[in-house]
Image (cartoon, rainbow, N blue to C red; front, side):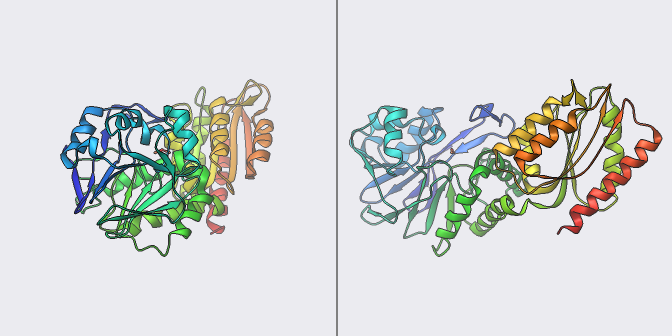
Length: 400
Ligand code: FEO
């Protein structure tokens, strides 16, 4: 795929990744892919903004060379040091031997730690401008969106904000790179929320701070490091990120994530009754089997929905292990202000609830209701489960 012009003299030269299985070695993207968006700004002097993960390097250099000889690059601007943005830095620096690396002060030691580069590395400050002779770049420090050294770069003439991880998404670019009308927005918005919940969520306060800091900046294009470039409606992705970041305080929208697991079908059968009760209230419900679903796909629902129903059995006197894992993951991602209802089967004695109480103390989630039952559920138990689901649905709806 050739370089793509965003505005005269400003081009996308990124890499579309359809082969990596796990982003950060953790999050599945084998079906969805991801893009590492790199940009080149050419005026009297030439700058590249962010690079790419260390794959398809020949393709990257060919694309770059279409716009400017790599040896003629004057500046390599690193908005962020995570290697999905910088993996090819060592090689590019070798080829662009006279280029100066510009990054935040916190990134300077990281450039050395990750790539052993100390020469011609310069820290830029918040609000500092770089005159390329015909185009001007301005830098804004946006710490912890996603790492402490992260910054954004703004091209003042065309009002393009190179926003780094902020406003990014999973999902390789499907030919077009812009938010044009023919794009499958459902796919990219779903993948943007999954990316947010997997990668950015822990830093929601800092994300809101960055959005606030830049709110007076006129922006005509949002050019993130991953996913679509928003030129038609940049406000759309800014508002989505703002809404998602605010869920850290509000707990999410009035809807429910059901996490269930079942060893021999008893808790699973009860899940059907509970879900029937829940949906009878009209509330929106997402359902996940914790034994068979990767956390990457569960986190977006957990993040965005205030209610959580956990239906898992007692396992060796404790909580069913995959459920404990997901609650731990939710805590690590800073999920707060959730309301939870628990149900589950046990064989000879309970125990799941005991461990759950301890976990919820740490998570600071509210346990609204719970019940357990020995062995297989009776018809009486099913009726109880349906009422339990209905009551919980109403609690979440009433809390709007
Ligand atoms: Fe796109 Fe924080 O890496």
